[in-house]
Every structure is written in C-alpha cells, then in structure tokens.
Figure 1: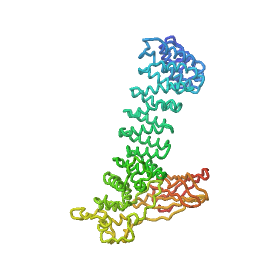
Figure 2: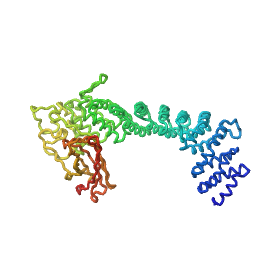
Figure 3: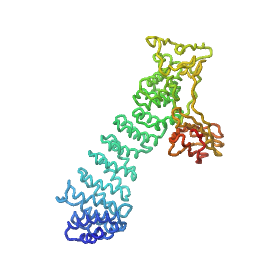
Figure 4: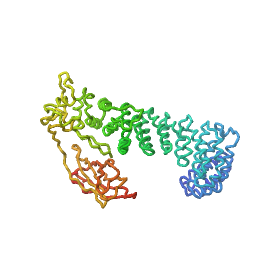
Length: 638
C-alpha cells in the first residue's frame, strides 16, 4: 500500500494549500519508515519544504529531511551540499525574530522549530568538519542568547549542547556547552539536573578538563535528596578522578559517607573503595582511607575489599606498627562495624608486639599498653554479637598473650577458657588470603615460666587455672563451682581439661584424640623445565563435595621469578575459589616456595572427577613468561 500511495503523496507535497503539504510531509515520514527504498524519490520535494515560510510546513519538512538522512546515505550527502547554508539562515532568522504572538512560548519564538532545526544540524555535522564550521557561529549565538529561566529556553539550550557535543569542533564551543550544563546543575528542577549529569558523562570523553571545572557542583549533586541524581552524580565523580585530585575527591566522599542515608551507603562505599584502590598514590594513604571507610560503613564493605587490605598491610612491613595503632584506635569507636573488627582483631593478633612496643610512635600519640590492648580485644569479643570466626581469631590472640592475663581476666577467666575450649572443637581459624602466619613464640617463654618452676598438679582444671593466674577464682559462683558447658560434659582422658586445651597441650596431661578425615596423596599437578606445582588435599568433615587444595610452587631455574600469578578454570559442575598467593616472588633454585589455597566444590561428587586448566604468569629478567596446562590426575575419591 505504501508503494502504491507514494506517487500520490509526492504530488501532494507540492499542493497549494500549506495544511495539505504539512499532512503530506507527515505521511511521507511514515512511508519511508515502512519502505526505506522509496527515500530517494522524496529528496527533491523535501528540500523544497525547507524554503517554506509557514512554520507548520517548515517543521514537518525539517523532520522529513532528518529521517531521510538517517535511512539514505545519498540523501545525507545531498542535504550537506544543498541545505546547510539555508538551514543556518532559517535558524538565525528564527533566533533574531521579533515578538510573534502566533508562535511565542515563554518569550521564545517557536521553540519546537528551534529544536527540530538543531537536531537536523546535529545529523549533518557529525563527522563533517566543513559542515561543522558552517554552523559554529549560529550555535554559539543560540547558546549565548537563549534565556534559561523557562523550560522552553532550557529545552533549546539542551539540544544546542547536544549538537555541539556531536559535531566536529575545535574545543571552544565545547567549553561553552559544558558551562551551560554546569548552570543546569544549579537548577532547582530535578529533571534538568539529571539530564545535565547524563550529558556531562558523555562530554567527559571529549573534554575532561572542561568538566573538571564543575567538580564542586557535581560533588554537591552526590548529596542531593533525589536518589537518581545521587547515583548518576556518583558515577560522574568516579569518571572525574585522576592522580591529581584523588585525595580531595576521596575526602569529600568519605565526609559525606558519615551522614549519608543507609540505603545509599552501599553504592557510595563500593565507589570509594574502587577509587582508593585504583588511584592510591602510596600505601599509607590507602590504608588510612580504607580504615576510615571501615569505621563508617564497614558492614557495607565486600569481602574481597578487606581481604585486599590485609594483603596490602602484610606486604608493607614498615607500616605494621602504624597500622596496628590506627586499627586499635578505630576499634574503640567501631560500633557494629563487624568488618573493621575482623581486620583489627587479625592485625592486632599478628602484629600486637609492635602495638605494645610503640615502635615509631609519634609524639602526639598516647602510648598503648598490653593491658589496654587485652581489655580492648576482650570487650569487643564480649560486647558485640560477632560471628564464630571473629571470636575464634580474637581468642587465638588472647591465648597468645603474656601473663598479664592474670589481672584483666580474673572476673571472666574460667568463662573465657570454656569459650575457647568450645570453639577449639571446630575448624581452625583461617588466615586471611595471601598472608603468611608468623611463627608463634615458644610456649614456655610466652607464659613466662622457667624450668625451675614447680610442676602444677593435674588433679583438676580449676586448680591449674588458679596456679596459673595466681589468684583465688573459687568464689566465681555462689556454690564455689562453675557449671560445665554442654561441650565440656563429654568424657575426656584422665588429666585433660579445658585449660589444657587452651594452652595447646602444655604440661604432662594426655592430649585429646582427634578423628582425622580421609587422607589423599599429594600429586605433582604441573611440571615444566622451570617450574613445579604440587597439590596437597584435605576435606571438610561435613562437606565431602568440597575439597581444600594447597598448591606449592617451586622454582627449578637459577633465576628469581617476580610478579608471580597463578590462575585456574574449571567446568560448570565445579565451583572454584582461589585465595591470593603467599607471595608474588618465587625464589630461585628451589630455595623456598610460594603457596596458595584453593577451594573446589563438586556438584557431581561421586559421579565426575575433578579437572582443572591452569595458567601461570611470571617475569624473568623483566620478560613476561606464560605457562599453561591441564590437570586431570586428581585422586579419584576427591
């Protein structure tokens, strides 16, 4: 039907009545959308419509030419050659026209025609420097003379900015366009601010420096009451961050994090962590900012973020003392931020000696004593509803404290010992990824005991605890005894007690037997002329489908490997989790190794065996080396 009607519609485009010509132009738009092949038949009649004085015909004619340019390359080139000068003249006359009651809207003559002309110029100017030069002057005139106090004026300015951003320009007009968008950000209308933020996200790819000038206004939009504006402004701020402004922008975002709404903290926290990790100029600044985020919104921080923080702390030995003191102070006001407590308890447990010795402490810092540290850790463990893993980490540290335990723990000593005994029945606490646990101090030195001390009788756990603490703990209850906990009522070998378990088997008492799960032989998973990989396996008692793998990497060459990275992939019926490696440097000639832990869950356990593809990257003498292989010699029962 469109093909049959096309000749008649083409004839009506030249009809005497302007209303008929307008309707014919609208009909032509529908025809070329249905049958793009007919576009070439309407090029000449469409150009004639651009010379009309009647605004209705001119408006539909401009729209028809725009659609023709989108469906026909021939039409686009024809309009660039024949129509740009005429369109510029029409737009200039329209912008300079006197008051006309027939077309006036908010003091602007026919804003609808303004917008259609600007959109058509945008299509013609894309990728064409000559066409863009022809329309530069009129675009500058529209951008500077249009009033922005009414919606009609704002609509024209927005289309003008969009046109400037789309055509080929030398930069001057783009600065003007970005300044207009900056004024939009100060508007009270949420819609205007939102479209301005959207346009700035496109403009930043063309002229970052011009957008940077409005950084303060954009930051204010992050604090807006409208959720959509906050989210869009936050995305724009992340695009604005670079090495020069990362500190100032991060400070502003963290300051706002303190007062932001709970539902916005998640997005804001994720963006701050991403910025700090990507643009951090130095490790100490990275640690400071991450501790601030953990203090304000630790519950919104993802696991991989605080895992990475612990790895950074571990790999910066010169900052261990500073970090531990900062974490200790942050822990005093942690509130319910479980992630901060998780990081603090682990770091204090690993580097508590630096905290107590106050190594490198500044003059303005208050000295920190062992008793204060012990009380802090104990208060966090007792006053906040923490997870099992955190309590086990904290109790591990308390277990390693020196005999200053005597006074601070008198009130709850037996209860704490029983808690430690109960928790010790589960799996050992996992050390954060990528971190090598330092060797514990000898138990005799730890407890400040000498070989001359009289051996304590093993008749009861309570007597041993009384001798250890040097105080009388019998009045802990009205009957002078503590009721045993459910986990402590199980039979145990003679001479064993919860306190002996707490002390790791110190003394002559017999150890509690441990039931081991199935054992699997270690395998050489991968071997080349320069590298050897050994896999050791273990199972969780209650999860036979889950296999814990400890990979050991050995360098067989005489050269040190740096930037060491191990990657693995498994089929869909397997799920794989890789912890970071203990180090990214592999010593030469087998003088040491790097270890890494993997966790594999097999949804087809008992039906399908494990299989894995691995890729290992490292540098040798500043040259990148890549080794790949497939591992299929896993033990069958895994």
